[in-house]
Image (cartoon, rainbow, N blue to C red; front, side):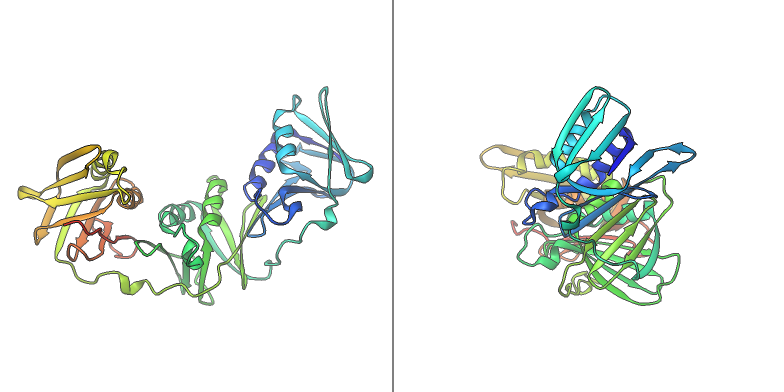
Length: 381
């Protein structure tokens, strides 16, 4: 195998596939990047067996020559060293050649490296999901779905299914739900094309977080291909594979209160900043406990107390407050995560009691489940 490639395009592809590579893998060859060259271009692959990313660099793009191939072939190179070398090369072009015993030479300008490679045939094959069911979704919508739900997945592996986001696709609607049993994030969007079948899948939160980092906002839409235990996200020159989590996701609809005793409407940005200030002292406590109490004239008081550090209190004017007076405590981080999902708009918070979960929604939402955040209070009062 021997070819010359534009360094910048190679660096970009290496950065993308490296996101899927883990140093903690039990399969040593998966710490490497697979490089394959054929008559169409260069394909780089990175995988940790849960996530696989495949980046393709064509020979020619927009009448510009990106790759010049002398001989076809493949090699697996240690991602740590290969990535560091490529990023530091001096010239705009790189020549890569595999010689005997998988030894690989990398030349750029006056720099010359030799790396020991591994046989490309030993690299595990990627899952076959090309024949699955296809659904198209706008890139900006997908990025928002991930941003507004993935933070609520569980970080604890006791219930593995809760470390993922539950996607329910039914008719022309996609519902995404994440919960760690203390909070819940829900987002519901209409699909442009009606799905022919119903799907109920759980995508690992880690996979969605990594996907969001490489989504190209310049691309209008992304195609998703669903198979029995895998999902594939297809972009122009990038394929992102993720395994799906096994097990039944709990029915979260019963967790959402249908009635409320109090309603608070408040600006999300102002409320978030007040919670952030109160958390400066509350972080010393294990649960980062923040207290909220309603006052006269639509005011609310945000406070926290840390016996070893001190206390803080701040009063805010709400847009409106109706119903029973309220004193409630909650995890400050959970509240800040939830508020960030609303992009600074006014939010309506529905309370059902001091020890009942409360729900945040955008003010005047036409669809009550378009975006919803639920938080379970902390017992202090």
